[in-house]
Length: 579
Image (cartoon, rainbow, N blue to C red; front, top):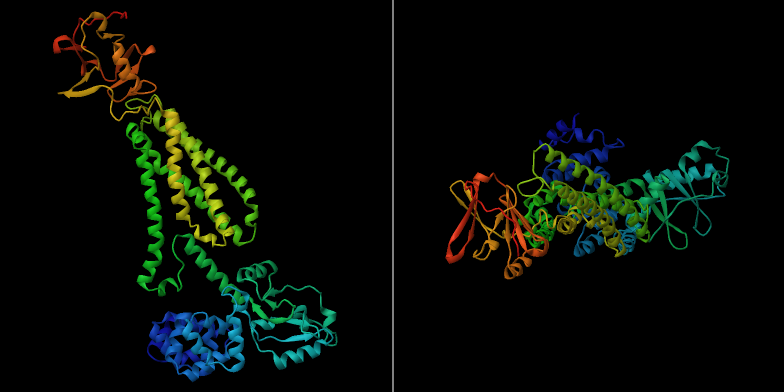
């Protein structure tokens, strides 16, 4: 019967089909999935309606939410039967979800043997191998024959995943070897256990972490590993199915933390709405406060942005490239450490590698950025040069290219070093989330970008113009440019034409003091004119940017009068000045 049909029957209260295949090997796993797909109340009531033997079989496979619901609604005597029937690792898994008072309450439902064993295992750290140990195992002696060993297993071993491997111990109970069950089946029953031993075994220590257990299972491809104490005495066994569950839970938490939120205690679909908001909001607030530093950094470079709006076009490009490279590096390093590919002691090896990677990757992006700016400039799609012209587009392209190299390299260094530092501080490297690295690189990336801009574009696009040195107005369709100078009393003080578009203005001593404070390079340019202080600060030139008939120059004369230099006027004075 299809799962959907079976689900509909359960909702109608018909459990007959649910019980038809209760002896199938995958029955418990399949039924647990079905119960978890039902509304919570239906899942609990359906479980309670099942026979006790089926309940015992299914209970370890249902999720913790359903387990809590079942035990709260079930009579305490029935709960006691189920808990005492569980394997030790499944029992510990259930106790891990309980609060302090509940632990005491449910411990009282266990028999003396299980209570002492559970109490002992709960004393180990939460993420230790002891929380996964299954104490239901059987050992054999090396002097036994295979026939004796098989008979021993039939009498004392239950059918569990731990039965795939048997453990050989000496007279003191110390581990000597492990043997896969297939060797017993494929060899003559008259052979002794020592005849089929290879003398090599892999084990876990009771104090080992679950991460260490996961790594050993991956490395040696085992289905079960023995757990020993410091004297090498076998205390129990850990099986691959429990390790896979733990690995999945760990990877889920790491992914959630790396995505920039607190890890969820329950599956997403079963997490209460406000719990989900709380776990997401905390990191969002932290990242938001971090991004406010980006706004602060941009405010610090406001003058550069005002002087060259073109710089703002590349801000998203710069910070996203840095954030992306940082996220890449963080992902690679966190995963490499999770797989024990290196330890924090090799930080310098990682840094060297990431510095070189950042330089190469930044160079690749920088070249692409330079070509793109140049191509768009030549095709007249955008103007990336100085205001009104494209004379300095190559400097803009150079600024962006060098900034990309610097930002990408900083991103790779930050993304690789932060997880290592957290690991060294015994913190979870996954908390160095991609959004966190991206936020850090955003702020520093802006500083790198505008620092390169200040060095390369100073005196060209960045002409330090909070406002221009000359007053500009508009009368009708004509632009009026007012020269800054003392009133003209003599011919030698009068401005004159150097060429068809440039006016030269002689400077007296007092006016030189004013202009020397204007700009280190004595240069300014906007869409109307170019201003340039002459050699020795003895004059300045004003070069008009528009057709002559659309501009007029005016300047102060004696007796509070104003004179004009209009290209429509024929009698312009044109002679060199002598000072």
